[in-house]
Length: 293
Image 1 (tube, rainbow, N blue to C red):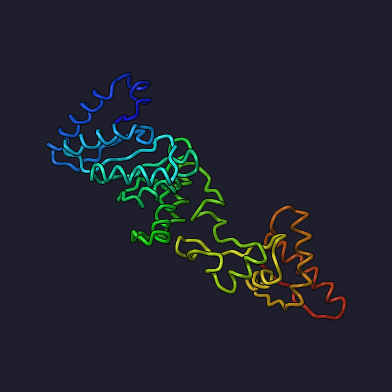
Image 2 (image 1 turned 120 degrees about the vertical axis):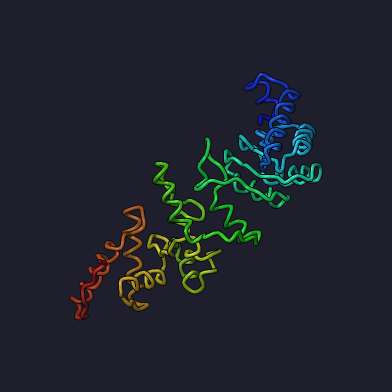
């Protein structure tokens, strides 16, 4: 149901009174058929608060079970959301559902702020798909509730990455590497300080385990990597580097990453290692070639 004056005037060419009457009739009809009723308040975030309360109370009187508060064009911020939803619940004593858009990149933050204010329902989409910039993302809201608000919804979060990949393929949208919660970069560590910290204790730079959302931790070797990261990376190939070898390899690795302007692939690292060991061999030190296959 359209709510704001902007929509009522410019889209419907109607009046607030007519909108209220139409909503009440529809709600009473649905109630007569014994169904659960969630009344949609489109563009609620740009609606005068007094009219929003009038609309909600009329819906409640007609039999509505829930009000769906829509930030249709994504103009809310978390501070305003917390304030308006708190006041709306106090004024109407209704169940509120949050429906937030991401036009300013705050859909998830606003959805969580709504929960903080007392909303018990949140509309979400996988990967945040939706009109324009999209909606609050299922995976972000669920993990935010679990780890920031300590409200576990008992979802199989271990399947989030698989689900996100499936939806990305089905919708013809790429899953960005930097996507919060499920992106490839979530648990990729390149910086020497970060890699060293996460090697010693994952909680140093990870709020939750990669396995919790169906990902794996990755140590990426780039220009910011340190010798500890190189040692750990080569263990993946079955190669145990000494501290001395890692220190000697480090400038070679950094030079290559700077020249290529990206982190190195596994085979490139092994080529550098092979070249390094060849030079040691020429000095009389034995070595065995390795493979990343």
